[in-house]
Image (cartoon, rainbow, N blue to C red; front, side, top):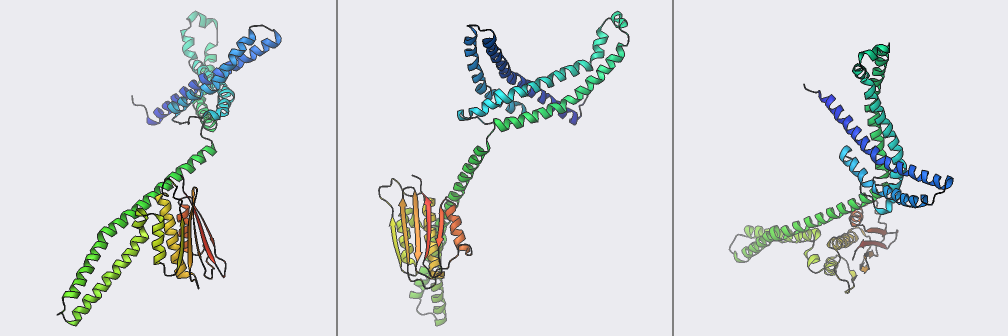
Length: 408
């Protein structure tokens, strides 16, 4: 005989709910019995003093305290094994939540579980009353006239009660899961803290992955396309110097190709430096910023104060952010700062903070909310938990201040 799938799922569900409730009743009634024992002992001390009663009470109270903490782990097993609900291990500092569940809410749930299991047993007994009747000898049945009617009523009542047990059990299980997750689960503050920690780690991983990808692209361009362009430019220069008997038109073509190759090399150099300058990895932030200042189209005063007594260099991701902030800021000064004649870059390491300040003597008026370049800078700074500030009043000067965390 094949059991229909819906009936099979219902039977599995009610069996799971009853097992969950029965296991919970055992765990929940232990504190209730301890409570009852403590009350009896206290009443005994008040009403009928006995020298042995305080000793027993002194032994019972530690049991109650141990139950308040020790029943948490069996409860975690019950939720995980029977309902698939994972409850975290609570720290000792969260002992109040364990006491609240095991000693206060748990006994109330135990009473509900006991009543439901009693209803189930009574319903089973009532629905099988006709079977019990037929087990009674015939002479006894004949002595009680009308037993069949009473047995039928009891059977119907038992069947109705039996039909009410599954929804009641499912509701009680849902109530227990909600209470358990509320008191024994992760609190909202802990969940938010864990979420923030996970997001911080994932963001740091994304930043590191993006930085590593930029390094890879820089190496591929430097070792591949750039070398091919250099070889092409050398060959064109050699052809231009040696092939002197060519027609003027051919020499002009070779000369133009040579210039284009050198321009392409220069543009590729700028692109490679924009992705990730090799000097930043080899010589550090000071040397990389010195190269930026030297290539800037306007005079730049650079001051880098990185204490030599620091045990190690700044993190590569932080150095990369500082480099690109200075690079983009100097590019913006050259392109958009009206009447700017000079710029000043100051980089200072103060404990666990790397502070970068870029200032120019232009006419000001820069608005971070309107420029996509400034928005990109602010987002890049925030990617490493840094702060970005900018002051650019009309008439100048403009000052950009960036603070990047550098944990020791």
